[in-house]
Amino acid sequence: MPGVEVFLKKIIKISIIVIVTLVLLISLTGFLILKTDSWKTVLVNFTNRQLMQNFNLKIEPEGISGNIFYHLKFDRLKLTNLNQTELVTMSGVNLSYNLKSLIGHHHILNKLSLDTIKLVYPASIDSLLASLPEKKDTLASTGNFKLANIEVGKCLIDDSHHPGQLLASIDSLNGSLSLNADTINLQLNS
Picture (spheres, one colour):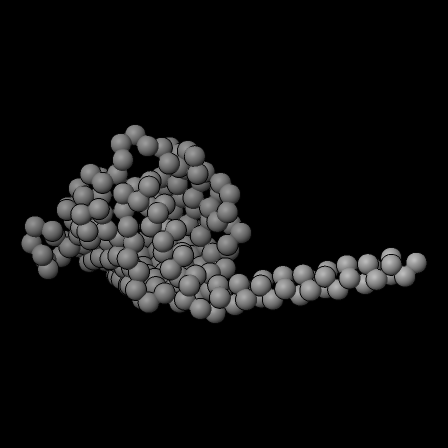
């Protein structure tokens, strides 16, 4: 049966070509995601879509580095509303997490470390509250969120009515945060 042998050889040859092509494509995709800046753009766009859809907010990061699977570092990170009002500015932001713990309904960040966080009060609080959609329970559908460890080197609260004038300055904060559909639990030590 020489016809069957030829047919089997062709099937094996085609199978090898398909498998090698798939391995090359997966390797190329992995390289593009991990070793180029394309994952940063995808991450920021995804995060901004979620923030815009749920809270009418946007982040503006500068200087992203790290590994998407367990650690990210931002030189500077701004949270703004639709009117581009700067609500929160953070510098030296380090996020530690396990990507697997962010998937599902129980989101956990291991650590958030900030060199400086600056809040503009009261305009930022008023703008933040005004920008949030009314009666939209986003946590009920997305589950729980836990931030196991927060470390802040310096917390500045600026007076929006008198720019440059500080209402408060706190050195060294640490604590934790947890959110669910009806409870916010923030524990801070200074």
